[in-house]
Image (tube, rainbow, N blue to C red):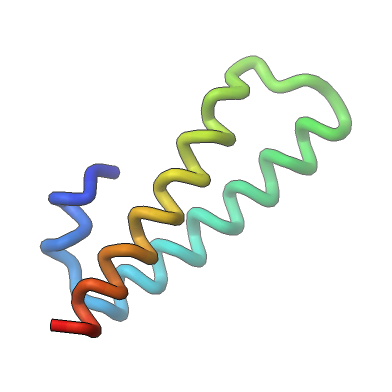
Length: 63
């Protein structure tokens, strides 16, 4: 998800997205521990999405 798209969401929606991203990341990490993932880039992408989400939340709360 792009930062531009995230800026259109409310703070509550962003917090829910962060939780969803974190759950998906944990799920993929667990799966990767059992067997190698086909697309390991998804882990990096999810970490970046979480940080983008937190950054946009911080921007909105300071504004």
